[in-house]
Length: 348
Ligand SMILES: [Zn+2]
Image (cartoon, rainbow, N blue to C red; front, side, top):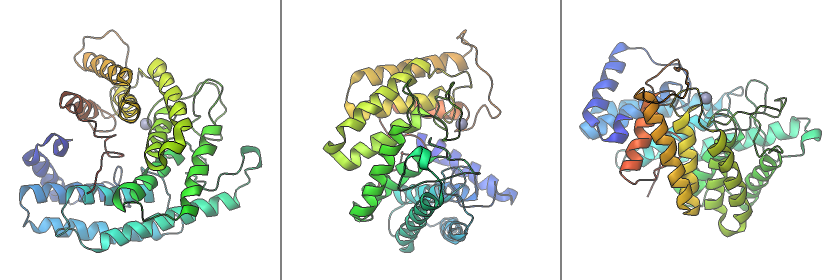
């Protein structure tokens, strides 16, 4: 969050103190919940503080060696603890560090990670009994369940895959056959939307009260459809309609009582609404985003009578106020920069 706000000195100082603790978050390959995220942020904070700092290459070396976790046969694919989280970390450093600083192998590591994610999806699809659920070409499971949303599920995985092809390899990464697999898997996801326009959290969920938050449900569906529309262009006008219907559900049900954070809070749902503004240009979605941001601000200022629980980590990016600070900063600067630590990376 400090890097995003331009507080380089604060970001670097925090990262320096964390590295002096000598203790990471958790061994593994992902950006959001494991050590790779620490090293990626450290590399960028160190570079902005002093482009000659040896911590930059030390951090990048650790990210490169963490590819070993992706190669493990039992590695997960999803965003928070899996290969997709590693691919996002590679996107993050490529979007913030210039080529002379980045080792040449980063791009080929990204290609290899995409191959592993696709192989895993094809293999899980062919080995799963999905007769009652149709037949998606790519299927992913986390702890035995087929999650459909952004955090652990297929929406998040496909979003990062498509961004890798569209933004970081300028369209030369995936063959037509692989693109068709992604397209058909998104269509399959759409077929799982229930009668009330909600995407269930998983294939195994019993239905009824569905979640409407980034980690599970419609916000993740919106983000994968927005990315799909950008990648596949005009032939996906029907996806735009589905995304807007999903947005109506977020607008009606998305003022969550779980705090103002990104993962399962109001700010995360606001970022899904602003993604619809980015896609459609319809000012309604920007106004709705601003309304959610204003309510979230009132909640943290104690001015709202909306009952909300205090999350376990009330200040951190994905669960707390830092996510709201990022949202407000984007709105004040009139900058539609994507969902933090998910669709916020660009590469030229
Ligand atoms: Zn969550």
